Figure 1 (cartoon, rainbow, N blue to C red):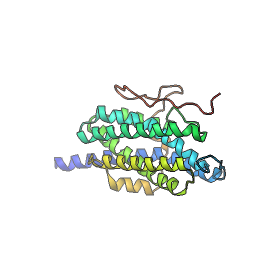
Figure 2: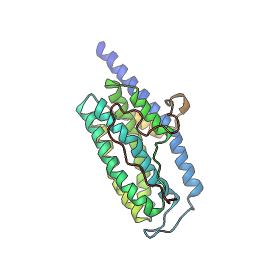
Figure 3: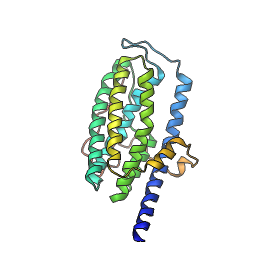
Figure 4: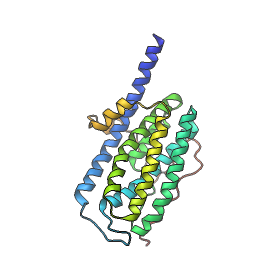
Length: 243
């Protein structure tokens, strides 16, 4: 009887964390679709091939992913209660350090300005993870990161298939390998609720994201806002074009 109650409680926690992540993801996915529909004709010529609005958006989104997944990885290392969760955190840190090095290298060559702060939505993910501990943290960490990586995985495939720009194609190759690795290590935690993730990836959320997202930091707050003992962060991007 006690085991049944524990299993039911665990399922409830997993379901709630994934629904929250799905609600947070919804406005971002809508925004991505809007950008694609309204500015797909904005193509510029570069020495590396044509650069579309979707190409530029992809480069920026890789940078943004690192700005929240890097500190999320630090939390996984520091707050995870199992070796598998800590290992997943290490993979987030390594993967996004390498991706960010590539992004900061190619952005000036393509004339793309990179952000230095995560979006309010991404800060909401970090705030959610910072507010929990123990096995509750492990569960939310694994499911939120698995859901978000699953969402971006298909977007990377689309860019890899459609881009005519060699630098963007190389970044997509690297991002594809990195995201697949991160999906794999999240699954190896044994905490991912696959049924709930499939439901949330195929169904549009009906709840109001504003009811579930944690309060966002004030403008100007530092990028690393929630790590318990953060010792490093991604380097700032060089502004381009320079003034």
